[in-house]
Length: 213
Image 1 (cartoon, rainbow, N blue to C red):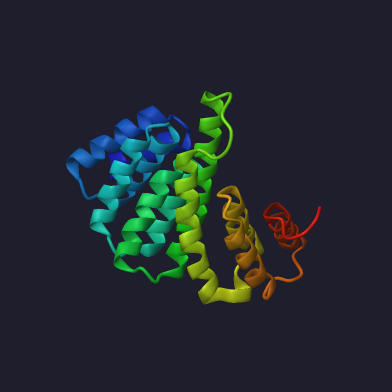
Image 2: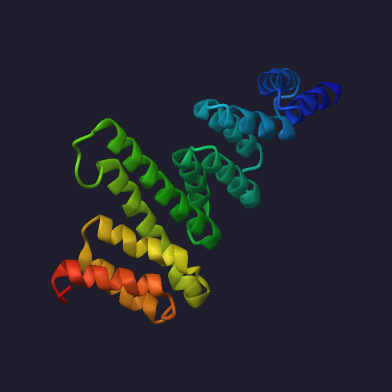
């Protein structure tokens, strides 16, 4: 208990390296210490060691495999620390067990969009003369637009408009304009008051040559 409390105090003082060392000592003595695993995972992740963070969190979830709320919180922490791909992986394991869990699907779609944007940003930064969509970004966009429509099927008008805008924007990014138009028309049935969705719809129609701009 004293070792863990020392690590917790160091963590609250933002002395992250020392806190992680303390939690590692706790875990040497008690490999199943829930809180030490969670805090060690968080510290490693925010310190830039995504692989170590995932390893700590995986150990925690090996002990608590059915804890969906904790799985979602861990995935959120990973995404907040810049590891959207790691967040997706944690959610995917939950979806393998419960593929119809709308909360997990919703999170998965959001993390996939974040991963797509990060992949595109990295691609643009290292390929100065690049045009178009990075292949990795395209892959993550496709994963997002596979997850989100299932959530829309279940939640309809209750689904936040921002998520639905993302689906349409992703189809446009992928140059799948027919899908963007079809999705826009479907979304406007439940979110017809959203100007941004109308704008995306008009953009897809214009790019497809269906209306003059």
